[in-house]
Amino acid sequence: MTHVRGTAIEAVALVKRYGEVTALDGLSFTVPAGTVFGLLGPNGAGKSTTIKILTTLSTPTSGAATVAGIDVLAHPNAVRRAIGVVTQGSGTDRQATGRENLLLAAHIHGMRGRAATARVDELLELFDLTGAAKRLVKAYSGGMQRKLDVAMGLVHRPSVLFLDEPTTGLDPQARSEMWAEIARLATQERLTILLTTHYLEEADHLADHLVIVDRGRLVAQGSPEELKSELRGDAVVVELAPDASVDSARTAVEAMAREVTVTGRTIRARVDNGASAVPAVLAELERAAVAVAAVTVARPALDDVYLRHTGRTFAAASASASGSGSEEVAVA
Ligand SMILES: Nc1ncnc2c1ncn2[C@@H]1O[C@H](COP(=O)(O)OP(=O)(O)OP(=O)(O)O)[C@@H](O)[C@H]1O
Image 1 (cartoon, rainbow, N blue to C red):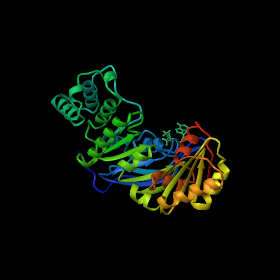
Image 2 (cartoon, rainbow, N blue to C red; image 1 turned 30 degrees about the vertical axis):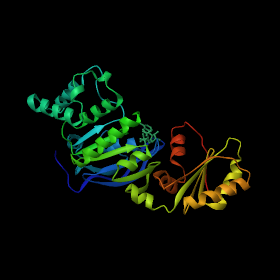
Image 3 (tube, rainbow, N blue to C red; image 1 turned 90 degrees about the horizontal axis):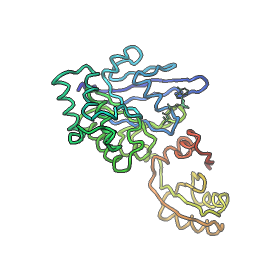
């Protein structure tokens, strides 16, 4: 594989407008070579638009980008040769075998004869699909299909791999296998991987570095640990009983904790020490005659980082972006 040293991807002030909609509003970031880089944001944040521009499928309204050191606007064909792209929808032919799919991908990239079959065998081995190579893809599990998708993106030995929502739709076991696979590709194959996800725990688990995007803008960046360590203390989450007064509960929690947010019947707040704060919060809720269904304490998670930078919880942002919910979130 051709490896890029230094910077593998650079996006500079990317703007993309679709008529009235501003999908990207001046997004800039840099991806060091050989790292897993996470682009995190709720539905509609602009992740797919960013990937489309970096993979030459779309041009920005303004701004610039290089991938593998190549300008995406000036030399799109050279960029395409240097990258692998695995999109959300599978690109495989379900009526063909895994092996046939990989051979076809090799042929599309101009590989022939022994070079093509050797590369296909190597990828089948790498993704643990050798035993299933002669089976039709339609008989593959979701996890196997996804591995085949990734293998197809690597046929031509790219130095940069784009993975758009790599584990959406996978069950927990297939998801953790895919996580292991992605981590291995970065460390053993020394690929630069840019992945988009709307799963916070996926970004937390996989990314060496991540940017959080909201409404087409960068709202935070750093390693997951750096981002979380910006937040002092613990998160306390109170689930209210069905008949409890949300307003009374909010007032009671605000008396004992900071950064209080309400999403539906869930109250989230920040305290210096969760273990000692919980009894005090519960006592205050009891004094206010608020019935509580459950209380949990957690170390800061990326959800808290997102909330800190956007004023909305990640779940509420995703729900409002996809139009599937109208949860009200208030930040005190
Ligand atoms: N072809 C298009 N025409 C008009 N608007 C578009 C188009 N593509 C994207 N958008 C809008 O641009 C914004 C960003 O969309 P984008 O698909 O990049 O978000 P995303 O973060 O990838 O979300 P998802 O996880 O849902 O794919 C959204 O408001 C979307 O509706």
